Image (cartoon, rainbow, N blue to C red; front, side, top):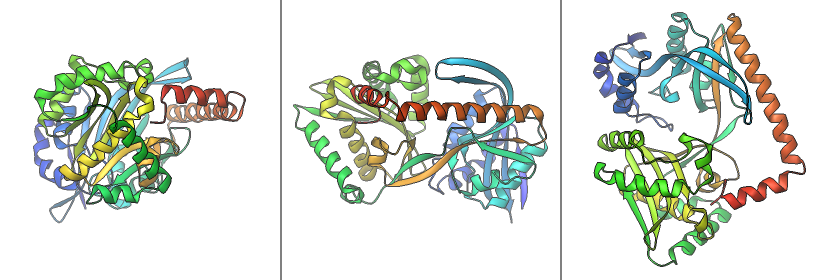
Length: 382
């Protein structure tokens, strides 16, 4: 097995065919080659794209970026401190080609041995996958879960027909979904639209922002809503021109009431964002919209996997999903680097404190009050 390294954007075209071929393997979502190229060309960061070759055939690809970042530490809204960190990030949180653990270790070892870094950010990955097992057993490296606990990663393995999908759901979930969809579709003039072409983006962003402004997520920061601005427009235009954008929006009596969007690459749909106007909550527009998304992907695309990403075990993702995998946010560092060990100590201490606070709230007198607030705001439920 030979490892070839590319670190110039002008060299990337040499791996395009292999990236597209290997991107079709596995359950996980893989960014398109056009997205990889755009991110690397527009970033000021250095990168290393590593290719594992055996008998002249590419077996695996992993891309690592190198950045000087700042890691923020805090509890709730209270900021404690910021630390400057030299970070290596695994692009897309994936190694293409579903290679065995020994090949993944070879790729990571080349990055680790040739770099001066404080932290490797592997990202959110499936527990007990070859990538997880390889990173957590690297010699001279300590790896840990950067989130408080392991989480659920929800997927839908899409069958050949929509009826098969509905039949695969648990009985209670199936009955609730069917009831909610009928409730929405009994309203006057319900309308669902699919947006995937550049000329449709302006209209979608205008209406999606109207909805997004009414949701609780809008107050949580820029990344949690959909904004009708030039940055978002350029991003959506780029995805549409690459053929990976797929947006959905629902209207009642001509008024936008729910939206969702995602990226469709290599037969996998990555669900990015959704929202609905709370004044329509009794009609369950979010449920009706997601069901239309799933039906469209089954009947009109080559999609095999609907990737909800991570979520709780009692929300809408658990209701729609038919595959539940454990996942964790994996960080890693060299054992003998004191600054990296400080980062580990801070991470683990704060995660323990947040877990303790969460247990006190969940099992204390605030529990019922918080659940009541969540229901009113549509959090975790459609």
